[in-house]
Length: 374
Image 1 (spheres, rainbow, N blue to C red):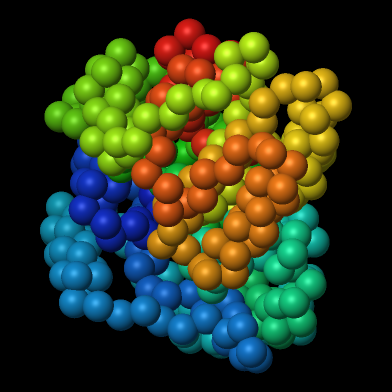
Image 2: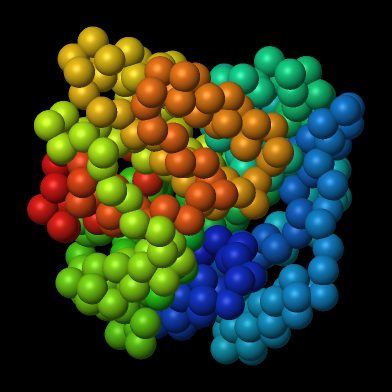
């Protein structure tokens, strides 16, 4: 009987943006090379290759530089004695036995559908409106990718006896699939999260960290000190407030001080699609129905209602912008208040004038709480 290698830690090395790549490297180099296995996965994942909605590789020289940087780090880690498996090469190999694999579970497939819609539609935030349109094209190729990942995992499993896996973020296809395989086979999976806009609050969790949950978690300190890590207090004072104040300069003034005010802040569509059913409240998964419900409720109770579309939406899919504007026009016809993505209204001035802030995945709720609002 072949003796398995005793490997304690598996690292998924898949991000090649500058700061996240540095965090993964920092994490790996604190571990003894003989205890580690690194899965290198930098290539594009073609999990919808056919049909009207097929994905295309988006190439630019900036990405090329980042990929080259990642490959240089991998070469250096190999020189230091770390074992590296090239998942990119294995996926292209396609030598796996197609007959012996079960199809991908429906719950996992639905999560990956979100990831696909986000990528194809430039982060389209109305998942429920898009799902039926793309499902047939999506299903043609997802099972092929699933079988390739299963083969890679089985190969790793047959040769190594491991304990824990570390995955950065955990939202995209490769991260969801590999973490699924690891957990199904008894590994402890840990997710590392680093949000770029906050200039470096890095945390670790045994659950996929979604949106602002990372703010409730202590900073990582078991891999060494990161020069970018900052406290919650500094995050709010020196990053959040300054960012909003610099980006949006128009102040909101309410016209009716006698009414209570409820404000709905739509989340950034990339975060909305990153949310999975494990963290989404069922009744809130459709932003259209949620806004309609709140609008009706406020009219019935003589409450001022405000809809603010996330500013990032101005850079997203035109269909996304058009749908928000159609909802906004309905609110305006009801004499309610609507601020589109293109608006330069300052978010903090809305928070200051509101009695309640509601969102479906935006960090403004955290900022509202830090300011003492509901």
